[in-house]
Length: 447
Image (cartoon, rainbow, N blue to C red; front, side, top):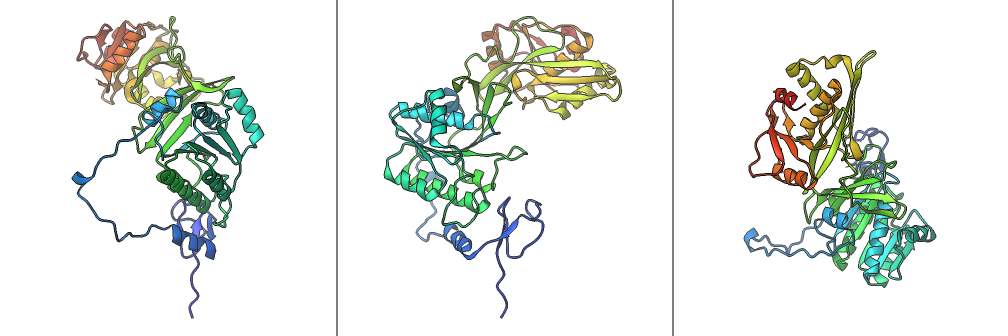
């Protein structure tokens, strides 16, 4: 009688196979496949999706649209990223580097909701209840309606949720919680999948919003199987340097709203709070130094004025190209374009580019400002602090329009700017005086 083959599962990506291999065919990791025991295989069979014979397909025109209800978290920035507020019954995952402020933000939100009269449960598998209380004292989040549970057993967490009628739940973190019904180490693929399934069931069945904190790996992705991000309703990522007090919260998945919005927070002695004075964080209102230029980025629906800096200096050996907050490959492209179109000997210079405030440029509207900053540093000539440079630069040297130009110009007017260098005349009339530079060669006229 032939021996029945065992089932193996990759602990990195969740790939399953009937025979052991040294290298996972899915994620290419070595020695990551572990043999599943009988209990684990039975659990996977129970949680697998079954076909419901009572289901019936309907024309999409007959499906009634449901209105999504939301309530405020007490933080305007978080509400903006979530699409207007927290959705009851939603499952939200927040990831970020250690010390970036994930636990601080959610404890503050838990305190806000409890102060509004909501019964809130904060589950911690990494810190004791006394440690969380000390942080709550600093954040001003302590309330009679905020309940702390230092527990790593999912069965104990579920039992506590069944005891009381909670309106909001925080799990800190998903990698530390384990289930006794799934014989595997906490943080493993099987455990994370099982815990997430159970939390999703609780959120949908009881209509309770649940926020999960997830650790990230060295490459910046949330640790655990990718199925974790597919199962939740919303995925948020914290960005920022732990040495800076500025934090950005971006939405990478949102079933109830847009993923284009960005929340801006700042860390101070009282914890993580909504950033208020944005104009003072990303650019200098006074006279700019040579090598600095201003532009406007669109972070979701929010225009933000930022300052980009460039340093062009003689190279002693091999020329260096370095950028912080701006794509290095795109910087090399712009430098090659300047050498080609303007006949500048930039190949013999070290060139460094920096975006002020720790923000990362993810759109092409800052190309014109980057070029202006490089030319300003190369010629050692300062630019006006009242002038903005907005436009995308192509490989042919053409400067092209970018989306949301009128919204950017309205923000420029609000911030007190008087001039803007853009690719074409604006469609609507603006109080900001616009100069047209539709090619790289014409930028020299405004230097």
